[in-house]
Amino acid sequence: MFEKKDLLIIVPFLIIAAGIFAWFNLRSSAGGIAVVEKSGVEICRIDLSKQTKTEILDIGGDMHIKLKVEPGAISFYHSDCPDQICVRTGKLTKPGQTAVCVPGKVSVRIIQRSGEKKYDGYTGWHQ
Image 1 (cartoon, one colour):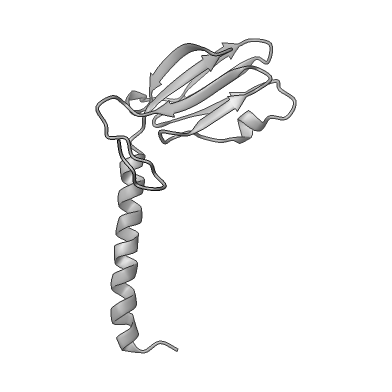
Image 2: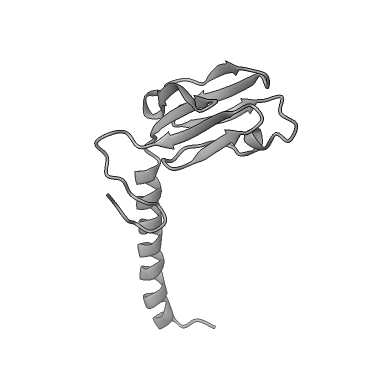
């Protein structure tokens, strides 16, 4: 199926692809700032790169929303909303990611720390 000559072409391409993949993932996993808003009003900002331990942040409200803040990540931990879409969204780790509890009117988004170049993870565009 493959000859030894084919491997001389395939292996370098695989190594280059793995290197590019690792570079993009390491660069974008540095963590950003989590912006938490309730009813359109910002209630806190959390620098995920400086988070050293796991904490539960109680937002309260009609839906009794709780957020789980971890080193480099934030997620909806608990909500009394009927669909639980916000909880199933999972961890937010990269700038540009967003999760929303619509019935509870709470949103969490990750933004880049100031001073960093703004890269679009999909197109490589920077600002």
